[in-house]
Amino acid sequence: MSTNRSHDSEIDHILKHNQLSVTDSRKKILELFLQANGALAHGDIEKKTGEKFDRVTVYRTLQAFMEKGIIHTIPTADNAVLYALCKDDCTEGHHHDNHVHFVCNHCGNTICLEEVVVPEVKLPKGFQPAEVQMIVSGICSECH
Amino acid sequence: MSTNRSHDSEIDHILKHNQLSVTDSRKKILELFLQANGALAHGDIEKKTGEKFDRVTVYRTLQAFMEKGIIHTIPTADNAVLYALCKDDCTEGHHHDNHVHFVCNHCGNTICLEEVVVPEVKLPKGFQPAEVQMIVSGICSECH
DNA sequence: AATATTCTGCAACTTTGTTGCAAAAACTTT
DNA sequence: AAAGTTTTTGCAACAAAGTTGCAGAATATT
Image (cartoon, rainbow over all chains, first blue to last red; front, side, top):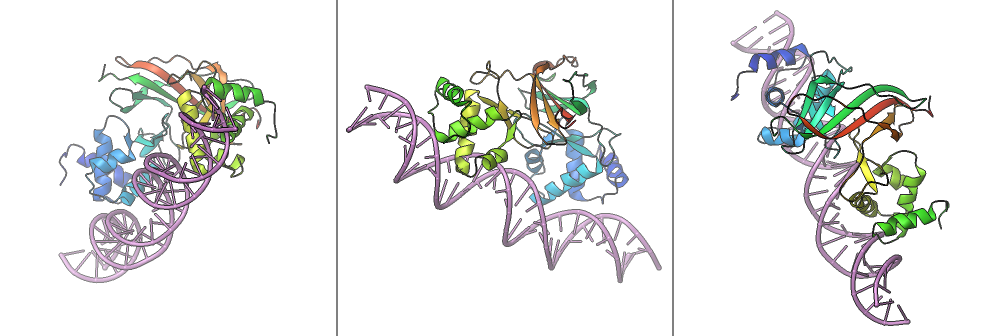
């Protein structure tokens, strides 16, 4: 059924490793994330699966992936909900998501710059930081 | 009608300066922003205006303020839509919004830290930054 | 004060996200 | 590999969030 088998064993492993039943929808949606070099919106997923799955299934799949720490959300300026694959060290409930996100104004893709560490910032007195998120927009390397 | 007249002339000036008719809803909503030291969600505004105005009016007022560069949106991790006053040098279409936003995990307020400049970040080759947004979450100075 | 323009509120609608439940698929056990 | 158990799916119905058209009301203009 799958048109691209390159990720098949990896997909299986990820799902089983997270104690999720291996189903068509989960395989397909996880495959989309592995193929995508950037983040996906809920709408993207519905489009790319070709209306094969129910809206509710997509919601629940994303929810399940979130809970297991397979994906995380990215805040955007226009308040669209974006999801992207977490790195391996993301575990249930605790996400290590302190990398920079880049939004391309040309192709519209949102990319996780895993290798770019969020710089330190000095806050006014009394402010105690716990988490920092940084979103850079501009032109990505592909569109450049 | 207004319970707090301290901002009255400022409110008038801002609206007229942006070629917006001075109406009750716009005055009241702008007053809320001037009073608030942080950002407001659509829901906050509906609550604080005491159901005086129609939902649609609130939407359209925020939209008008956005278009004129009076307020801007802030991205949040949980994808709630937040609005905050722009600085004076925000003009129609072009927002100079490069300051840090702080979200307090205790009181839930989102505060614009106008004085904190977003630090430089080094991107991989080919990535050309245009705008940077930074959201720090933690405990704010009031809750500390 | 009269006219022209803009804004508001209502109603109806679209879009987005959620919940309960029976049927279907996946996993387990033997 | 067939039976039973658990999980997941899709449907329907619902709830929340946001949009649009339009008549009446408020604001601005003369």
